[in-house]
Image 1 (tube, rainbow, N blue to C red):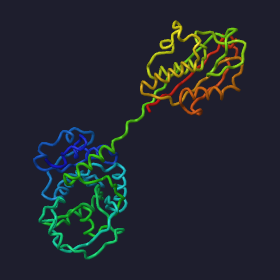
Image 2: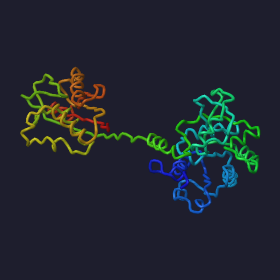
Image 3: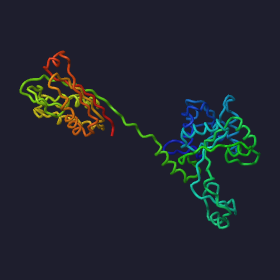
Length: 389
């Protein structure tokens, strides 16, 4: 099987390389040079796509395949990018930077700085196979290889692809290729014709899959480069209202406020806690406060609002979410709650398990309108934002 068709983390290498250019906004058309048998029956992902893809027969050598593909380029095209199908991890940013450099100076190649000291040697140049492997005989021949020069690594770059060219530069470079000679890349041909080739800083992960030993590294890169799932956020709204009657404590946000009247209810009637509970339950689709804490259940008789809130936090966490922030508006004519807002926020934050600055509580009046405006009732509106941990 051609290495470009091998699966890396479940996707063919070729498909990964093609997808980079299909998704890149600067690319108008894609030409793929394949071995003749594959060109006759190309993979499905080369046939049905969102951008024009033409499959052509490649040649015996690299420059032959590139020349065959270049002959099919639309005559209106001003810049041409050449990329190895066996480099499936180049990024869109690298493609963009290479295109920009070629547009400015004529030719550009992605490359990374050499990290190791580089030695120039003399001896049997054929020592070691082209695929990087060695048998006993090949390993033995290294005894005849000696160092003639140590090259400053600051002057050495290791070429990658993509490589990009102005149309005329690539045309002239390909015309320079001599029959029987082997050019390792198109940038080398541009260099021979005396054209400056700009280096674009490459990417260490942009490896070329050449031997079977490269496949495990490619698997790791593929898994590491997978986008992490976005954390899902959900919002819910809540509302609560209670009549105010003598003889009841006025509990708001878990804090008792001096008053001669308090909310009438099965529990303590804490409208802030109740509204936030409703908002949280609504965000995860778990109904409302009456479903989980019905006024027909004696267990919840005079239950503190913070206790109901703590139970709602457990339900939310069981559903795979946590509280991001809450915002509450309390509508009450009297007494004023301004002096108690910070203690309320602290009590709520402690129960919700979030920082105090993620809890907002505001007091409003109803300007004498309806039962709340006449001082006969208290109400609260809340919104809660939940997120996946």
